[in-house]
Image (cartoon, helix red, strand yellow):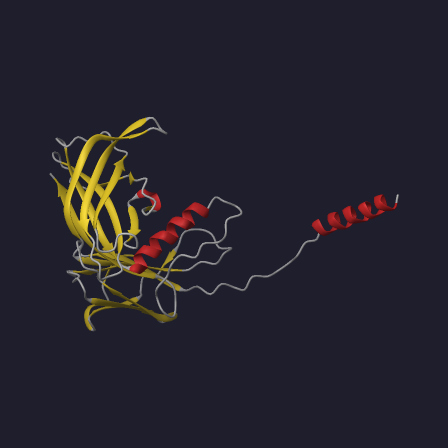
Length: 288
């Protein structure tokens, strides 16, 4: 009987504790200016987005900042000041040819926010030795399906710590549409990680430093016909900040619909604030 009484007391305590409501107040969110700039050596311009941050309880679309002041320097020299505004929150520095090995500094300011800065050094363009595309060249026994196959061989230098992004693209050989469309590529190689929306694969040179590297990729686009499409592979050497930004975005997307997942912090590299300024040096290789 004594044990039953103890058990009833324990259950009563547990149930009463479950009904306890803890009130807490979140600190008011102070909006921060958050720039985003992801650029490469192929564009001929630098595009910058500037928005306000939102608090954890705020919803709705982002509020963009239309009157930010932006300064871009190359090796300490100003190459763009107060760029043209395409629309609200979007700015463009036109006629900018990014130089391999040069240091770039971006400064973003506004009367209502802290002035924030970020620096990047544009990596050297990767050296592609060869690339091939093979129709129905890969078979996945788990899915019982055939896939196209893309291979790329490049030389990885031994003296630097490098980060990479590899992507496939196609363009129609005929017709008015000259836009390049990205291909969904993947691999069983555990060293390569998928990006958000599967727009490419990122990896480091940690296990391949100084080697000749061959990447064997599967392509889930069996409608591609080499007679009708130009096929390209883009290999980019990206900055460390670009790598960790893309990785954190992937982790954020994967945790969005998982209730018990830990919060993911998106990688930022602006001092005195938040935002991302990241560069890549790309080699667009046409597959014959």
